[in-house]
Image (cartoon, rainbow, N blue to C red; front, side, top):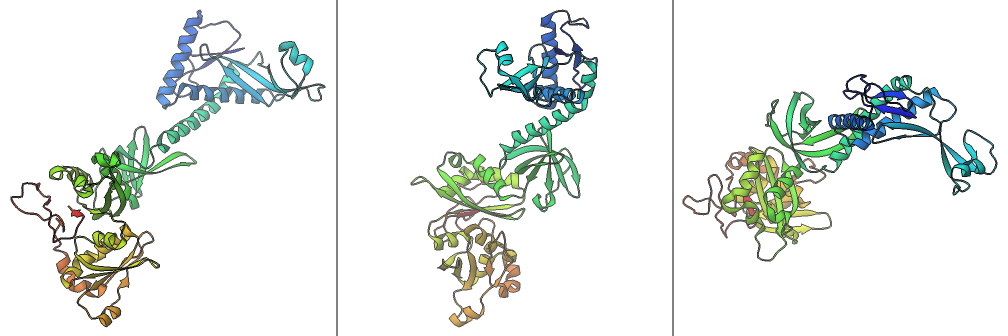
Length: 451
């Protein structure tokens, strides 16, 4: 038998916890009582498990792997072996696995039925039978040989533990602390693990400093050669989705559902919601009393604006709502090609398109339609000639806008009111809040609030 005794702090076998191998059954080094052996061994296991962030069983598995590797280096006869280690005393035994046969042809891999039944009469043919093959000199030398294997096994266990811990939280918001800011990305410490936020996942205009605490979206958890890699994001659309889920209890309870999020990180976001209960206003629910809920979300998003629109099962209504704050005259839907021709008054063209096509682009992204903005006052033949050019594809969806008037309306689009249609600001309105316009107007586009 081999005894693995925790002698603290005699031999530094693995990291900061120390294991010491002794041959035979006698306990030396001043540990003369079995209770002392048990307490010292468990103490070392628990200390190592806490320092590495592992379970005690994972540390024992690493120890078994190390002992088995050391045995195979010393003994070439048996290759199929298992190691058992006592949880209480650290006693370790090496067993060779043999198949029970009638007549032995390979004594290394097989054992006769008669020999096996001399130990256990119930052993049948074909069963795997284990015999104790622990060598008498399997002591300090084996321990030193096991050192590197033990370290590698612990590193592998750490990687697996980190992966198992974070894969369950993929797609959620985590709170971390910025540890490094480099050209290739921002490194954020999440718990005891460092994650990376690449440049494409950052929000343009946001500045990050060492020591800053951030809420980040865990976008991806992957296993690479050097361990588990966490990729976090501040620009992911689902960050906004999770913020709404956290701030709006009705979304958590299933009374309000988020149907889609379209985001240009750092600039503007559109969120489509619908009510799952009759009589419940989904837009007002997300805004909250005096705008408290939406304000909490906006504080996390910084300078980014957010619009909440009402989702509709009718495609024409949904597209019209998505183009808020512009008031839409009519919408013609081509379902076969997923194209929506939207007709608006001349004074609404610039508002429907938005600065640099942002409003129509986000609406297209949200609805899944290619949106063409048309001036309702233009002659029919002129509308055909002035068919809008295509903007670059955004996440596989193209937004069409009449870019011919873009230069003429650039100045006007810069004056788009942040309150938006459907929530008209008014001084003295008792329902309003500072910086947030909440008064409803039936003349404006329905189902939308922009902050």
